[in-house]
Structures are given as structure tokens and as C-alpha cells.
Amino acid sequence: MTVTLKDFYADWCGPCKTQDPILEEIEDDWGGGFEVEKVNVDEAQDVANEYQVRSLPTLVIENDDGIVERFVGVTQREDIEDALESAGA
Image 1 (spheres, rainbow, N blue to C red):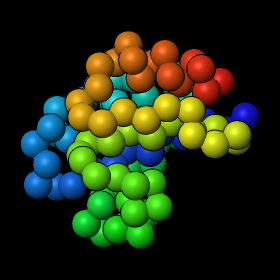
Image 2: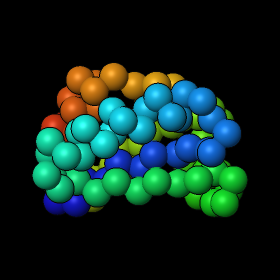
Image 3: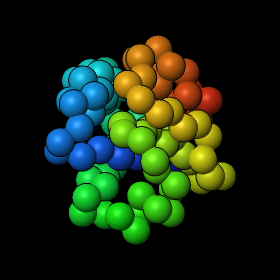
Image 4: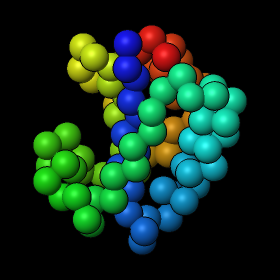
């Protein structure tokens, strides 16, 4: 099962900068149990539209079956980890 965390962000987004260290910690601790895709909405508007991203940061956790969870705004580590577990990471 492939689990992906899509991180929709923009360079001008302050809350996105708050979210980054949380994601980096999870990545380090989980040792590659999932993939992280950073999506700059200014450069990849088509992807942002496909996922109906309206606010930043938006995190989308998906697996082979589709989207498992989506978070809008700065999201705490525990919530992200719970969603990753639900997705099978």
C-alpha cells in the first residue's frame, strides 16, 4: 500500500512555514513509511484545482484507495499521524 501526504503550500504563506517543521519531524521519525509530495500552488495550480484546495496549508493523505483524510490550516502532529495510520503507513 502506497501512502502519500500531499502538502499544498505557497512561499508567501506564513502558516505553511509553521507546518513544515511538523511534517519534517514526522518524516524523520517514520523513516519513509509514506511519501511526501510538496505542491507549490503557485506553480501547480492544476493540481491544486484537482484537489479543490482553497486555503493554505492543506494536507491531503491518500493511499491506493483514494483520499483518506484532508486537513486545512496548520495541523498538529498527532492528527497527521492518526491519519497516516488509518491510511496504512
